[in-house]
Structures are given as C-alpha cells and as structure tokens.
Image (cartoon, rainbow, N blue to C red; front, side, top):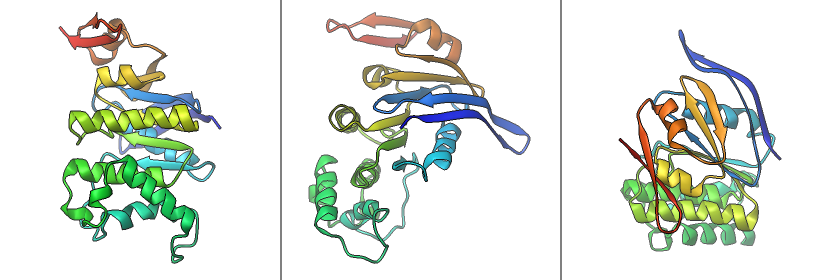
Length: 232
C-alpha cells in the first residue's frame, strides 16, 4: 500500500517544525528525504511511523545508537520477530530462518554471541538494521542509516535496500545527507526546507539543490554516466 500523508503540522513549543506537509509515499520505491539540518526531515518520518505503524508492516531504524541493552547480537536481532507472536514464546523454525538470514545479510555472523554494548558504532547500526530486516516488514523507515558506517558498509547497507526493493518489493523511506549516495540509490527525492516540502523529483539537479541548501552546486558526469555533485 502507498502511504498517503496529508496536511501534517508539528510544533515544539512555539517552533513550528512541519508546516502543512502532504505527500504520497509510493510502495516498491526508495524515497529519499533531503534538506538542511533542522528542516524537519526526522520529524516527518517519525510522523509517518506514528500514522501508519498499525496499518501496515513497518520497521523504523532511528539514527540514534542505543547502549546499555545487555543482550547479545543474536538475541537483539531476534526481537524483530516478536511483532509476529506473543512475547514469551520461543522462536520457531521460521523465526530462526529469518534471524540467521538477517545476521548473514548484515555481515554479523561472527558477532552473534557478542554483547551489543561492546560493538562499534557501525556494528551497532548494522545490528539494528538486521533486527529491522528480521521483522520482514513491507516498509522500512530509516534515519541516516549510514551515518556511523565506513564507506564499504555504507554502500553495502544501501545495496541491500535496493536489492530488497528489486527482489522482494519492499519499500523504503530514507533520510540522508550524502547527495551522491542519494542520487545513486533513490527512485524519488523529497527536498525539504524550513518545515515544508519544496520539491519532489525523480532526479537531482544543481539548481534544485542550490535553492534548498542555499549554496551553489556543480555537477559532473563520470564515464559511467553517473552524476556527481559538489559545492562550489
């Protein structure tokens, strides 16, 4: 199902963070939200989660990396299956299959017995991604999923998202800051500024980015035809 958001307004005290935001997020796509810090990107995706989490299978991966959890990696990833059954039931064969698959997909096979609190920041982020994938949701809502990852694992997690869309029909809404990674992986782009959506497009262009970020952008094409953006 598509997620149809209409006229969202969010205020924190006297500060209006989202101003009459409307958009239809299309299933089977990677929708990437871009914009300067403080423009309302995270507030928007949290609003989407709040509105639709009970209506469709949805998994939210926040930017924050939590500590003091006291579980090993395998047990934490297994929590992704508890939306499917009563809390104190043990994992069945299907659960175990999903858990092992998610651990392997996020390259955490060798970490599954290790305490989550002892992992690096990037490993914690991959662990949270594995828990989300283990849930086998239809929609994945991700806030800066590669912020603590090195370039290799950043590419890997975004490649995984693209594969899940292509091969399993999953849907992603991702908040990002890396324009070039966004350009590579996004099917649709939402550009935000000062709590509003100012443009929805299928391709990024320097002029659009300049209007949103208030800085001049250039663009060059690689031999493969990929656009690479830079600030002038």
